[in-house]
Image 1: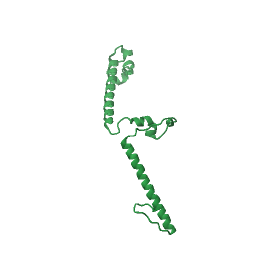
Image 2: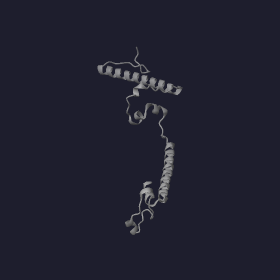
Image 3: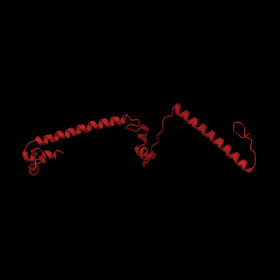
Image 4: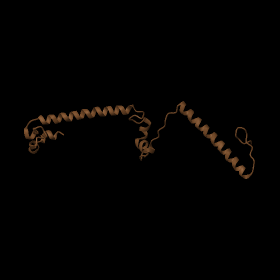
Length: 149
C-alpha cells in the first residue's frame, strides 16, 4: 500500500478525462515530495487501528458465549487433534491423564456400577426364565426377582 506513495505517477490520459487518480500528485520518486507517501502511511495506520478494534470486539463477544474461545485444561492436555477432529497423534499413548476423584464423581461411579449390576442380574434372570419356558420348565421367582436356591 505504501508503494503508491513511492512509485505513483499521474496518468495523463485519466487527467485529460478529468479523473485524476492521485489528485494530481506524484509519488516520492517522481516528485521528491512526501505528501502522497504520508497519505498512504496514514491509510495504513487507519486500517490497522480499525482491524485491531474489530478483532478485539469480535473475540471479546465470542468469549462471552458458553463455549468460549479456549478449550478446558483437560482438553488441552489431550490435544486439539483428538478433541476437535477425533484424530490421535503418534504420541497420544505416552500420556496418562486422570481427573481428580472427588465425592461427587465417586458417588456417580458407585451409583452407575450398582445400577449396571442390577440391570445385568435382572436381564440374566429374565433370559433364564425365557429359556426355561422354552424348554417347558417352570421357574419360581422370588419377590425380589431372584430365583430361590
